[in-house]
Image 1 (cartoon, rainbow, N blue to C red):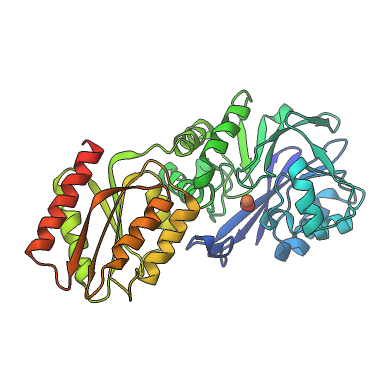
Image 2: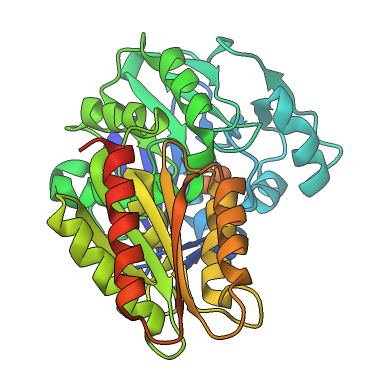
Length: 396
Ligand code: FEO
């Protein structure tokens, strides 16, 4: 569905709530309540559309646009980001408003030509370029790799509104548009889930983007996903600074494991209890059971990531392999890692997990736990050793 909200006298929001889209960006981010998207229309002497919506909503979107435009045309289309969740309805919109001037970043032009119309006369903008639409001034800030190379944000000076596209987004699907209508803890968790799964590798670019926009006087942050930030603008910006800096909670441990006959699970429990006893805050996830996107969200600010798996013909279990590939893709920083698992006649899986964690940039300690079949007294000693090694490294 699309909800239309009037944000200011001349500024409208189109809020797509797709409660069926649990897999956001394909299988990259699983969100059990669905996904949400925003586009914005600004009325002035010239009329400006900022971003569009997904292609499946293009006809409904066009209908809502027509209702507000009342026979007028769109003069400018600002494409802050070329990724199809924002730009794929551009095809249909431009067919109906093909006199509109289309603005994108320099790095956005090529993918737009590739994905959409190759013969549109796109107008590329640089950092700090401005356009006037009469009473309003739009300032462009390029924000490469927040989230793709082409990303930019647009600031509407006279209304102090920042159209931030992916930055500061979340997938909240509630019908209310403003942050003030939700519990702050819920907003921060949803934004963290989004950041971890979409932005985690972009930390240094996120910090650069924050530098770029810090001199702007912002009343409203209007992202292209989730809610509009009104009461908590400073809070979400500070969260982005913290996440972009890869800050962590010193005693936070995430254990991710999977097991065939329960032996790796016994080690997991023993390790968790020992670490809690040493002062750690431990969360345990079973890879075959829990949502991997939620695991990534918890990894974002953890200090320690421990991975356990049974041996599966010389390697790790497939559920663990998927988690490790996610870690590789999301490139967590400032993490200490550890490996454990049960085996029967080969413990090659321990080394494979260690190598994959190292490839992801995790600093893996030189102690691991490998239990031949059922854990016994020697396993308990190894668990003690790993737990104390982790404590030593973290310096609790
Ligand atoms: Fe919301 Fe990078 O797409």
